Image 1 (cartoon, rainbow, N blue to C red):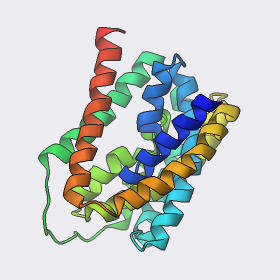
Image 2 (image 1 turned 90 degrees about the vertical axis):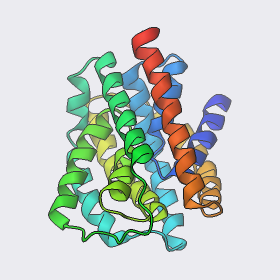
Image 3 (image 1 turned 30 degrees about the vertical axis):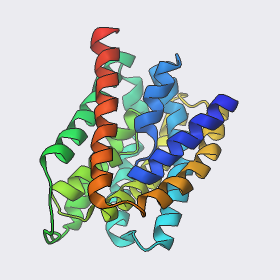
Image 4 (image 1 turned 30 degrees about the horizontal axis):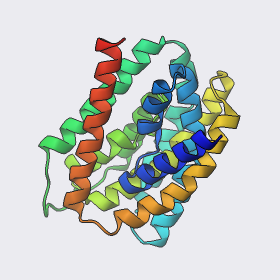
Amino acid sequence: MIEFIFLGVGVGTLSGFFGIGGGTILVPILLLLGYSTKSAIGISVVQMVFSSIYGSYLNNKKGTLDVPMVIVIGSGGFFGALLSGAITSSFDDKTLEIIFLAFAVFALMRLFFKTVQDTPQKDLNRVLLFIIGFILGAVSMTIGVGGSIILVPILVGFLHVELKKAISAGLFFVVFSSVAGLISQSLSKHVDFESGVIVGIASLIGVYVGIVLKDKVSSQLQKKLLIVFYLFVVLYLINRIFING
């Protein structure tokens, strides 16, 4: 239990600071601790419900959350994530890890190569936002991440949304995808509720710390740290899948 509490605080801090659901770091750590991929995904989904709801509440209080935009994306994410349990069941563990790696590589490349400064935000088509949300919800919750690992680079790189606003939007999107993902993964019997709830409750402390830190650093520094974070995840997964796998 002590191990899960510390794990939850750490994951929550990263979740609040980077606007991610927590699964991007929690799943690799649980794999490192010896959990199966499907068990790690189930625990991650429970944790994301806690961290994303609390983090979005704090972001909204600070005025960095564009609720109308994310309601549209999140609605798509909710319906897409309802398919995640069935999709997870149809793949073996190694295939799920490769999909996870592809997600992380894409996010890293978008942030590394696309730097947008002082560019007006594009008009956001609601149908396009819903479709983006649906696809992200289905695929991301299949591997136990909230979808913000891809949504944030899309909002920043393609739609020119300001980074801090995009990070807040990414975490709010996870509310929709994680709730639907929890329903779907539970029906597929992939969820360890006891472990997930312990990590989830502990993550609330970390989420508060992460959001406070996020608002104290510049967007440039935050982006550099996000690149370093994604690079670490990519290197770990490459080592696990192709070298030690």
